[in-house]
Amino acid sequence: MREKKKCGRLVCGVGVNDVDYKITENATVDGKQKQVWICPFYRTWKSMLVRCYDEKYQSKYPTYIGRSVCEEWLSFSNFKLWMEQQDWEGKQLDKDLLKEGNKVYSPEYCIFVDSKINNFVIDSGAARGEYMIGVSWNKNVSKFASDCRNPFTGKGEHLGYFTNELDAHLAWEKRKHELACQLAESELVSDPRLAEALRTRYKGA
Image 1 (tube, rainbow, N blue to C red):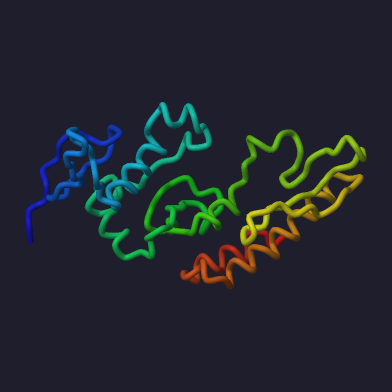
Image 2: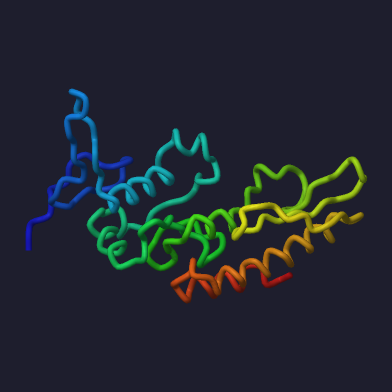
């Protein structure tokens, strides 16, 4: 077994790159040195650390304030070993789909998911305004509108107008649950834990 790389400068002040190979490759392009490759495991690991510990990133995306990485994954080699065993290619790292509200990146609750699924479950609470999720006020008809985006078509579905905000939200929740169950059975999902999480996430509808 080769020796691990000695600890150098910390990544985001907390992470240790302790592998013994070059994580990037450069080449001369048009007379200038440019990065032509970066290790996908390192890229994912560093991106996770940036979301949790980079103040500039958090000032732009405040929903990541208070998030953290488990002690085990502060070592790049440990994270890489876990990621190599996952179905990760072309997918995004998610920390709170298996456990809603989870704030810690760890092997227990993290999973790689298709971007369509990640976009489907994003709350977007900060962007939706004063009304319940899935609800907006339509001044033309003076009623609450209920809308839900279909992850398969990428288009929004209008679910109707309601005199009561809660009724509009419940219509959104019902359709969200239907679509989540369809996703759970689709080819986008290969992990049974993810399928179960999708089936139960909006089950209150």
